[in-house]
Image (cartoon, rainbow, N blue to C red; front, top):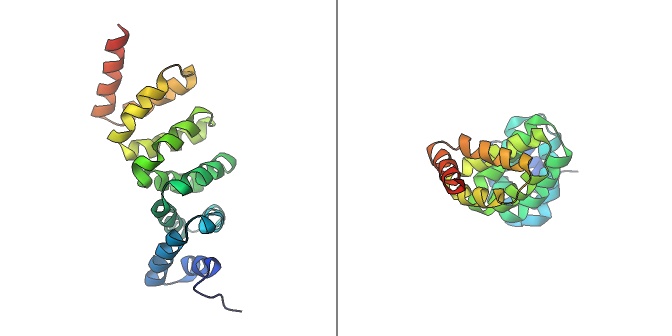
Length: 171
């Protein structure tokens, strides 16, 4: 039985097997469906061997924005597949400012491997993530503070400047 293109499963099938135009359309439709499509998109992103399909899933999730951040971060915590984590981190980074707080919260108790991916997402967001990262370092445990410092360092000149400002305040 062929799946209707008007259903989540139909759009998921289009992501997996459709031509470029059908994949792009399915991405937009899944993003519009929103939270009802989250489990199917995350599952496909975890299970596929195709990085192209992962990219389309990540694109749909990033278009959903903040509602997708929590479920995606939960999946990243339970699935240590580096390919999945890489595309999920790219997705969170593409969400921009909406993902900063959930990323920082997740980083606080994440395993070391996951922290690297979360840091990369924050680096992709860039400047808007600097102040929230600095604020989160206040009264943070030493492991998180070190991870946040390294994230600021990886952000380049603005992040390094923020670190220098923090050191000057401590003196």
